[in-house]
Image 1 (tube, rainbow, N blue to C red):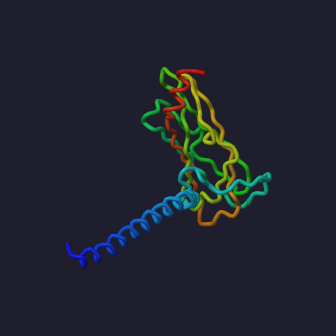
Image 2: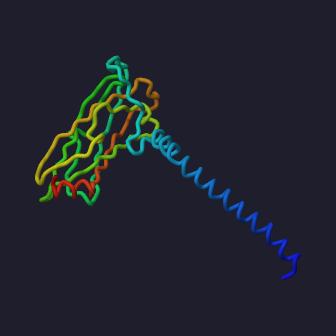
Image 3: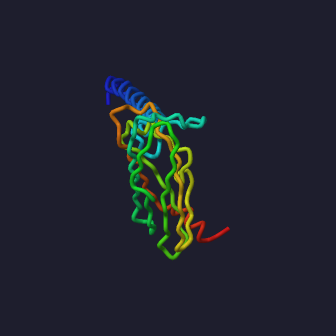
Length: 188
């Protein structure tokens, strides 16, 4: 190889290494930015139970002229041998007032199971105005074989909810937590 060819390859190698280093930094930055982007996406769409920030003050003012229907839905992951359903399918509410309902879970298996519920709110825009102050979805649920439990949900819908929304669906899917179930089976 001649001296001329060797000189031409060195800058190309250096440029390629520089481009690869920039690519690596760019990928790290993108990965770092994904967490807040995903959080914002979930907040906007209501996926993963991310709903508007709960207000610490007591909510009871209410818009007495406006009524919204809330539909309660439930789904069980196939790996979990539970029955899981809302006590009521629909509730008519007034924005700005506190409400309570419950879901009931029944462990149909012959062993202790631990599960976690993940909520979502539809339409996505309503998730910004739907606030849960108490929810079984905040913690894992442990049920012994054959055990049933009523699990409450306290919520309110902000009275700033856009007027075009008159139906909100609060849906839960409940999953088996394999690690916690194994720990519950072994005991302390």
